[in-house]
Length: 585
Image (cartoon, rainbow, N blue to C red; front, side):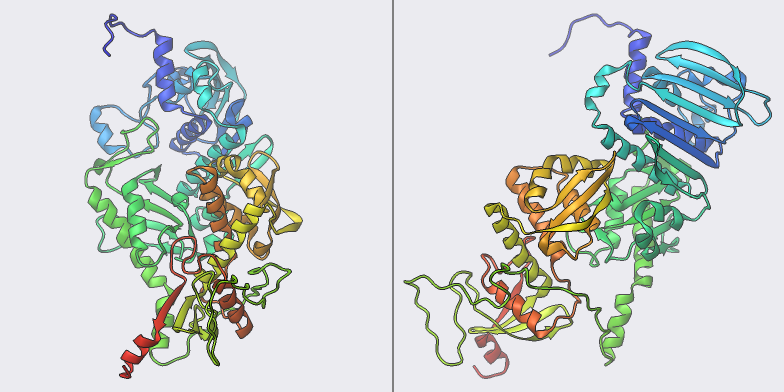
């Protein structure tokens, strides 16, 4: 429907509010813009403090070059910038900011006090602005650099507040921004405090691996593989990528930077995933921190108000640069290929590490691992002759006689109708999955309380997922309680997961809940995640008793043929197939 109202110019306050809403979506947007200004000012140390997720206040302090006293008020004028002089300069942008919108948009949505001193000035200049109104200016004592205090964010745009989540979720988003900017600039010392609690603290020593260690943990950082520019790629790429066995169920571990700017790009994400082709199972994603350097004239960062999205003049070159550099690094550092080569030359396969893995939770504790098969229905006909194994009428799979293990990953077993090859991880996962669903249906979870509560840091998306699925988590014995803005305490886990890394289990479960869904979808997805983490892994050696317990448990399951992700648990080779292959048929 077309309005016939007359066209008119918006009042300045309304226009400023609309522009502010485009650039400043939430507290994290403010933090990002202010930090980028500090980086452009050459800061070597940046301190960020927030209260109530940034809605009450945000303070960013740097030791950069500062702003001249006669330019402090001018910095808040819309499109006032030191980065551009002409339209041609847009093709040579190498700074974080350039449009001169940040300070004006922030002031339009809050109360701002800026204090800045250049190194050759005796005192600092300050200015206070609220909305579009200049409140005060003057001078005061301060160290060289700039300090910006933003208070009562969105007080002038109350409509924006309805899109803001809890203070904990907003704190998590701010933390995510600071973490990515810290990885983009490992030579800068970053400090983030939330309500007097330190969330991020980097050294600024210039080592990317040390910055990544703060964000992804020391274990992940030390395992990551260095990526160097490829001679076959159009553009240089460098950074760190995780080996294939350090993966995640979503893309949140992929951080991409173009000319030092943290960006979102579906094409570059796809390039990273393509580099891992054949190395990751479907539904698993790598962890990567990658920097792509492109001539400024071939990339346009001016396609979105917050500059997170970019456009390439030759997107194929950017894609192939990422894909080739990462693939070459993975092939060069992949120890699995070397082990296969030694094995192929007649050597012995490397011994698989043994870790304790009990199968006493594959069946109910009061039954035990060696329970007989359930009694068949009275009208069921089972014919058993000497030396023949009985058929299992409930699951459709026979009771199996386990013969051994291949490559510490597959079980060889004999059934009444031939040979069975069993994927030990998929089989155990199936057993545990249906066990969990029965517990959920009967409201009788088997729970293992933690001797000491385990503190776990959650990101904003995980906090939102937890709010949606906490009742289902509790119904499986996965009990979490809040302990601060982004920290939760893990009080108990499902008994079958008692030897699992609790933090990884919680992260996996919550990451899979991000898309939401109905109650049935939620509880089955949680059960699948718990079962996957608790199941024995491929490459883990099992003794004969463990092998037989797993084969027995699989035979009495509701659906023994597939794991919860749809992969087959068994492959059957019939007697007829064997006889034909050996020329007996």
